[in-house]
Image (cartoon, rainbow, N blue to C red):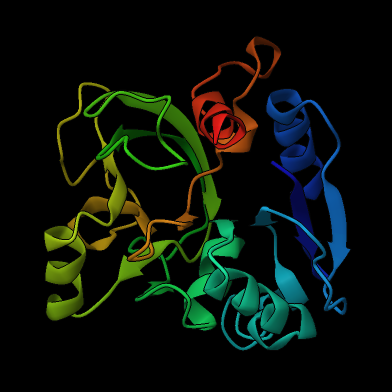
Length: 227
């Protein structure tokens, strides 16, 4: 699988993402400047975290209008895979490629800490190396990670099995304390209807090697490599 990482002004997680992808894929991903419009023969496009365009207006709102997003939209129409992490998730919602919005954290504070995610399904290219119901430690670092959607949209996500990950305790229990940013129904990550686009707020790329303090995020990249 050939992968590329999109770089917007203010993005700062592209190197972490490149390390995670190279470790699982065995080769360097292509770096894509936001003004490029030719994605070539890439299979996977990754929009990493950071503060694109300084998070002016709304997080991801300006990046969603960059030239590269037209190419990413066409990539999605062709059935390509897309992973958006943190700011990448915000950009995908602003570009109407995933439903809902990421609002200010319920605490109104930037959160930089560990969290635990529960795997809701493992029959996707992003989650096949996980077990359904298992939990793993992940890292959150965001000020606007409070996932919100109207009740009809949330019900549709649930009914179609498009919730990929939820915030839980280490044992998999859904509690207000585990849902630190206040996301609706403890949703941490969602899929597109064809399950080829994943938006996720915590950073799996931060935990892919024991030297990083854990490997909870590695199965996500191993799943993509296996695809």
